[in-house]
Length: 153
Length: 288
Image (cartoon, rainbow over all chains, first blue to last red; front, side):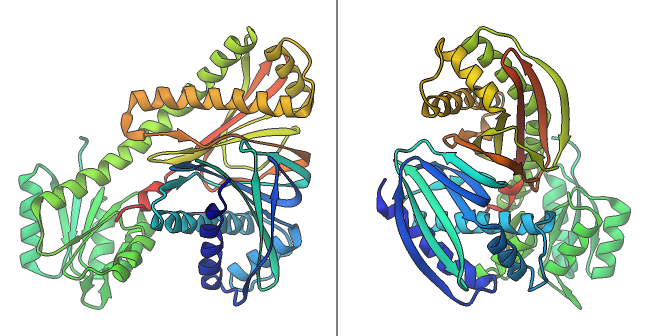
């Protein structure tokens, strides 16, 4: 997978998170994986079609997800990931991916995105179709979100 | 096209008359007009329009406040802004307020009529998809199962909801993108997954990778066939598929989406199989 497909997601994160009340945005580790992504907590999957085709998988552990939902909802405490909090998180990934799509279009790559599907569980393993997936660790006010990108020409 | 009832919101008598003339001479029915927030609320409640044209600058209010008031009364009413002011910021603000088109004054007749037709066609297209899609997906599952495993399935339960549910162990997710975006999920136990794969390969799968690959392709063919049929029925849908993601895990909850989905439980020779499909209206906001 071409590494240039990663930048739009980093750019989008840097652009969107401050608008939602996160002051500090940092990039953490970048790692390449095979076609399998594993984790526990929250997984949100969005499909991508267009000049490139694939999936983007957002992974957030449950405690971080609560903190993010809380900040997005103006600081109201979130003790449990209820429907409202889930909807905020889904909307977040939708905004991040849509903004990444705009960044892609600036470099001549047209993509469209599907609705997000959100899953919660432990020891989840998700298999993508492309041979290689790139995981990018991003931090918003030190809360980690991992974006796994699996795209093919 | 079905009856379209239009209300014109503008504080200039000249503009109201001008817009009314364009709309009526193109066969649309203008059922009322308004120039203030109070008048807007009253005329919308009383006349129940399908579409409203909206000026941006109004005495004591603005077009966006009026748009929000209209959608509080009835979310499905389409609003087209017609204003002398137009810049990126105000257009974005209008989009956030669920306006479906933005036209600048002086009004170009063709532009206005196209915007009205497009706003209404979008609604009809969504209604068409909503009516048709689930029967088509269910048929595709029966057909593909039959062709790939030579077995028949029966549907034992079916419901429409947007509730969360617990996965039986393996979920195959396919994102669908086109005029409307959505997704299909197939959900089954590990045992059923293994049984189906065995039937497709006609021998026990050697590894988990084989099961994942087989299920991904199985789901891809079902969704692909279903979307092709829908696209043939109405090519404006332009549905395309993202590649499948195959998820497994312990006590995985599939969260409720923000839109309504349909679920069918199929009884197969290999165990129970759940199919969940839904489309969101979201595409509506993507105009420029």
